[in-house]
Amino acid sequence: MIGDAPESALAEIDRLKNMMRERDRSIFKLKQEIGVMKQIERRQQRDLEQLQSLEEDAPKIIRLLKDELQSFKAKLKQSNAIRTNEERLVRQYSDRIRHLSERNSKYKKLLKERD
Image 1 (tube, rainbow, N blue to C red):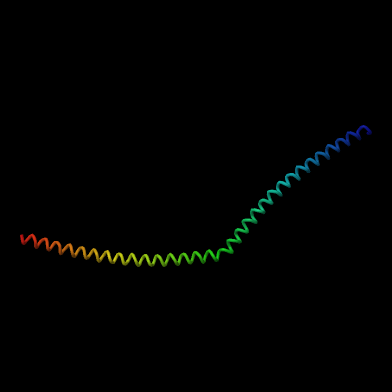
Image 2: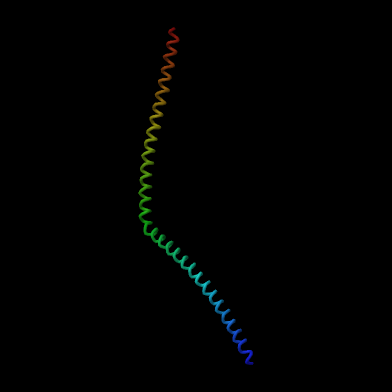
């Protein structure tokens, strides 16, 4: 039995050393997981702050977009008025050209008949 004591003590020491190595590996893995979780937390916090900033800016952005839309509507209305006026002028000029062309043809015909 006395001879077994040192061997059993050595075996116990080896067992305890193995347990400590396993515990150290577990601690290392836990520290890595904590690091990853902290990164995720920082990223989520940053995203949350950006979202809150957008929420605060949303009324201002909406107002600016509405103002811009009103401006575009006014420009479109003005552009349509100009286009309508230009189309009317084109029709008038076209009618005038047709009328003058008919008169010109009549004068040519008269000149031909005179000769």
